[in-house]
Length: 412
Image (cartoon, rainbow, N blue to C red; front, side, top):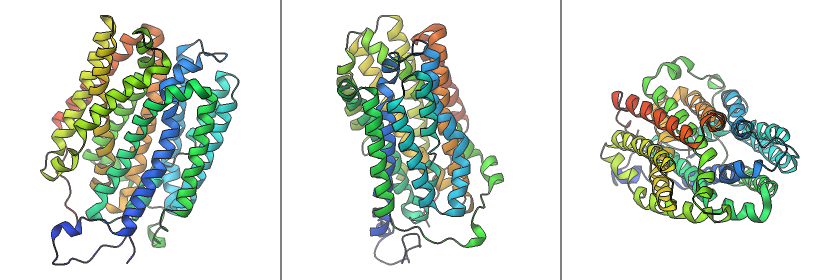
């Protein structure tokens, strides 16, 4: 039986149905690893980009620095749906390998870039490797409905873990390697991801020719629950990128040198994972996932307000660390759960289209957060960035509160 087939019902126990088959476990761990390697390479530059880019010609303009950070997301947004469709038509693995090759090439170009303009172009080439929809669609192909939530959550958690690890290791690595060295490391991590796709991920199942390239666009673009999740991921990554236009500078102003920022990130992340760990699946099984998501959005709102207040009243390291803990609890919860919900809520015939739209909005958030964060920082400084972030989080919370997510679909 292939990993993508539905397992026959037995009399052993209901729990057995929700255990992964060996091929499903292999596919889930391998694709989560591919995501982790790629996102680690992307996130490694995030905590130090704004500080290191000022050393390049053209880096004295915060708006241009923000554009260089965010243009990756804009190109991703443009190409996510076309490459997702191409994976339906030509196969998942070839498109994933092509996208990773583009990301590696852009990383090497960024390592060489002598000016901020060249660095912006390199980030655009990185963004051309828009494979998130293809990877998640392949994972859906290789898992049964009964375990797909767990598989998607593994991918989401790998992204959150990559973000967490990057915040801890990026400052000391940047001090040792410089921004160019971080991009070279990013290229090497991407090559490791390509090897995993080629030799570790199980073969993708054959799809009937009649279904190749179909997407169910009308269903995806009119499905209220999916549209809420699409808007949510746009807001989440806008907040994430905008924050990191300002947070490194706030830590420096609070008296912590750049090379020691990992200490704050490590403390904040350790506490956030301790609070979040083991909570998601338990509450999901009890039917409380909607409440968990709204609580996580509320934590993002609180973190934005807390950081803005701390900035206005002379931020201390203790205050910044505390509010970053609050942010990471909310961020990691949403990053691990929302992709799973998209996969479960989308009709099977429209799953690839739904994931393409979701990842497009995620990429738009990366662009909007970097570009708008830089522009707002130039206009009014960190307080303006964080206050606007709080307004966005409040709007998201209001929409989520008025339109709660439906109950999780039962496994087949």
